Structures are given as structure tokens and as C-alpha cells.
Image (cartoon, rainbow, N blue to C red; front, top):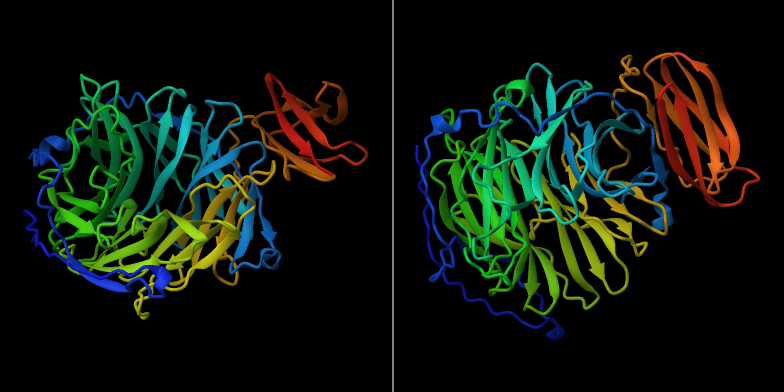
Length: 601
């Protein structure tokens, strides 16, 4: 069944007033999806055979790696919100000598504890080229490190995740992330999967056919049709592409892939749309490059099986006053350019995101984007909501301040509750001349402006901010935001929750299987005066664990005896030692590892 999309052109004339005259920006306006008179696009509505697309493209899965071992690390620190005067309760995960640079939150909808929260974190190693992805779960009053995937190379901060849930109780956490082999390499698209409740995890590279050495993939998005098809869902992925032609000209585009049998990791099929989606800007010239913001959402057109659609947004292109839209069927065939969303008075548009209820025959779509008010440098956040699958859009300001101090809200992420209309959550950073903060907001159809007041999650430490990510609990209106910061030399992953208390969750018994030696980062770190060091042994081993100063002098021997299989924890007390960097080293059989810790008095 082909999708018929009505394209209408409506010229809307609106008077805008300078904020210095004391008049506000308009609260709401309605526009039609429109095609510009002279679109700078090439339309490629290539039709592909869905049966052929179902064939497995990477039978050997040569880029996949199996990761065994399950890591658990209680690492919760509650922050008294009165210290910062914030609106939300906060928790903190200390990362030791690593830096958290990207995050994505997912929430379980089904099972014995619906509302359990998972966070996928991109971790930048202190040693270049050894980056990893960590997966945390909120347990009984603590955050647990459940899985580490050592992707290596150099990972980007853009990460997106999707949780699929089977009626049998099986659950798989999927994510996509950027990766570079070296600092000078092009960005590649990687995926990862963790089977919840097990030690099973996999990751691999997405390899589109016909890719050239100059192709670079980034700004990845992921979604699924799990709400409509819990037992036979598919995973859908979009990526921005920058490609060089033979004469060194840039082609900006989007790529699409879909994955069948995502519960059956050994037999899953990665199906690639070989050519670009229908909107792209060819031959921009060597000096004309654009960081293309791409996103993806799924909706269902009718009750018949296979009648779902994917809708894509695309912004920050040569015509940067609009958001571009295209759709295709779930097989990726017959993609169509379906028009644009213009903001207020042709102001410049930056990042854009799209979400939907994710199935259930809903006709609602939500787009959020950054808009440069009067192209003056006063950036606002704007939403565009459609209740007719994108034919008409209602525009509302999320953050429409005219203040000279609040200049630059940067969009983080947007999520929606599966199968529910009018419940969207957005996170963003507010850069200003006075102080910076992490903000979170939710939609509320009962208000005139459609959005509630923003909740401040964090004040500034004058940090190295990372873009925040937003998620939700099992209760409507309750949300969690995650962000990272690097004040002084402390590196934190911060969790802000806008509800009276973090949700309860059932804690598992310690995993009986220990598959490898491991020395964990001490906690807390930095410390004063004591800290805890954990390690695990997969077999009976003679263990020595010692502490050294920066000159290599032995400070203390914490362990020097034979130990059976198991998990262990020892305490090191730095009383009497000066502040500074110390090292702790374990030797157990042939396993030797050293880690750094900081004593700060």
C-alpha cells in the first residue's frame, strides 16, 4: 500500500516585534507542510524489491565481537538539592579517570518492574583509542554497571538507544554510536546489543554497500515498531552521511538500515538501503560542509501488517530556514520527499528532532528544533506538533526567552511514551552570560502553550558540558535527565530526577558466573581519606594488591594471599599521606593490571 501525502503550500505572513519594545514572541501559529518554490534538492525515489532487501547482507558478521562478563558496581551518591537550589533530586556516578561524553536513556514498559531505567553511556578513555560503552541500570537505591563493551577507537558523543521487549519477558537494549579508528579517520556507524538479565552483548559496524573511503557517518538515530509488534519487531536506523566525490566535492545525505529478528542475535539480518534517502545536497564544494541533523520516527498507517512508515527529519542544510521531511515504508522502498516545516519568519534553524507515539494508529508527530530569533543570536527552542501525520503543524515556543543573558539553548534529546499521545520529554542546555544550566521540560496538552515550565536540573560549574539526555519512569509526568560535567578534575555522570524519589527496582543476586579477571576503578575517586578497591577472580589465584606513589615507591600491601573464585573488596586508608596521584596494582596468576587514583585533602 503506497502512502499518499498531501502537499499544500501556504504563505503565512506574521508580524514580529523586537523584544526591546516590550512585545512578546507569538505563542502559537499553524502552518502547512510545504515544498519550496526552488528546492535545492535532488529527488531520488528509487524503488527496491522488499524480498531482495530481506536477504542477509553480512552472513559472516566479521565486525561483530562477543562480550562476556557482567559488571556490578554500586556507585550512587545523592546530592542534596538545597546545595544548588535546584528543582530536582540528583544522583551522581563517579567515573574515576574516564570521561562520560554521551548518554541515552531507555525505560522498561513491561515485566515485573516496569519503569526500570537503563542508561547507555559513551566513555572516553584517558588513553586515546580505548573508548568504551557502559550500560547502567538503576537497582535497589543504587546505579549498577551491568555491561562494558570495549569498542575501542575514538567514540563520538552522539548515541541513541532503543529497548525492545518480548511478551515472554526477553528484553534487548540496542544502541547506535559514532566511532573512528584513529583521530584522522572518518566517522563510522556502530551498533551494539545487550540482552538484559544476561552476560550477552554484541557490537559491530554498519556497512552500507558501495561506501567509499571518503564516506563519513554520524548523528545516528534508532527506533522500532516494538509497540505494534512486541514479538516480531524490527529495528530502524538513520545516519547522516558526508561523502566526497571524485573531484573532492561534498555530498550530504542520509542513509537507512533496518534489522529483522533483533531478538535472535546470531541470525539477525541487517538490511541496507544502498542509495541515499531522497533528500540530499550534491556537489556543495569543498568549502561547503554541513553538520546534518537527522532523526527518525515510526508510525502505523493502518491495521494491516507491514503498513508502517518511517518519517525522517533533516536540518542544517544549505537552506537552513526549514526542516526537511521524507518518508518510506518499513522495507525502505520507495522513499518520498514530502515537504518542509518552516519556523517563524524564515529564521535560521539548527538541530531538529522528531518523535511519535510509536504505533497504535496514532496520527500525531512532534518535532522540536533550535531557531535563531530574527537571526540575532538569540536562539530559542520551538516545537511543531501535527495531528494529521504532517499535513499541518502547530508551532509553539518551548524556550522563547528574549533575555539578553539567555542566548543559546542547545537541544539534547526528545522521547515519547510508547502508544501515548501528548506526552513528550525534552532536555536541553541553557548557555547564558551569567550561568549555565541543564534543563528538562515535558508536554502538557492542558496548557495554552502546550509545554510545562522547564525544570532546572543543574547549575554550572563552568564545566565541559556534554549534551543531556532525557527519559521517563513508568508514571506519566515523571522524568529523568542525565548529563556529564568535568568540574576541576572530578569527572561525573549526573542523574537528575524530577520526582520525590528514584523508582524502586528489584536487585538480582550476585552473578555466579565470573568469566574473567578484572580490577575495578576505586570508589570514590578522588577520595579523602579512604577509598574502596574491588577485583574479581575467575579461578583460584595467588593475589597481590599493592599501592605505589608516583615515584614507584611501595606505599601499602592490601592483599598478599591465595583467594578462591569470587568478587572482593578492600579498603585503602590514605590518612597521613599527602594529596596527589597514587597507583594500585594487582597481580593474580598471569593477570597484571594497574590503575590510577587521586587523594585530595
